[in-house]
Length: 321
Image (cartoon, rainbow, N blue to C red):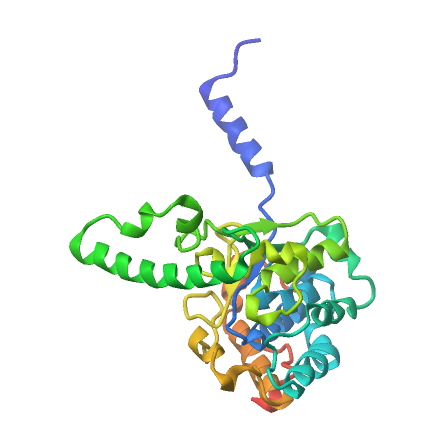
């Protein structure tokens, strides 16, 4: 028997490559400027239209709300009507400060209400949580201020670099600080493989941790900041096929009515939606935004459910459009 020819080797390499399965489809629910209802609507479309059990879900900041729900196999519409709407919105609208300076344990209780066994999320490792390690140890307030200043500085130095063709001065920052403003999102850490539901919820609380939001952060939360503080777009990708969801127009599935961080910090936005019907209308719009991008989802590996035609699946919030 002779040695294999070059042609044989090429064929073997091709066959080997063909046997490597593609990565599972993934959905990244990013920072949302308090407009989490957009992502809830998108998740409802994913739930009824595709084999969502096969999808890995990346969550950042407010994206944790619908992401944990979808990864638990719970219908987002039912969860919104039973839990998020009356529990979260009802609570925030009844408080003088809305969602600010709230108790993180109340949000944990929201996730603990997910039936039948949320621990399945941890066991199946479908959920990936984006967190930002605090660059100043436990001094999260200083870190939040520095991040804001550095973001503004990066915007100025990047513009100067483009106009004059020079090196971006922000690149000279110490690596730990430069990462917080880098377009690559180098300051973000993706966490998965949770040993327990409590560990998963710790990571989710860290990913939502903007200091003014919680008055009694856990020790781990004191060492982390909101996942959106780590630079990049705020919706990390696992690979080139990840579908990103944000109100921001740069996302794969954006909102028709984007919210800015300036809006989020005004008194009018202390309560993200003042009534349940306003929230339902935003969920409905998110559902339709995802429907319009069905071809994109399919091209990124989302497997349609048998009989679930994109044009015919019902939007449960349609009466509020």
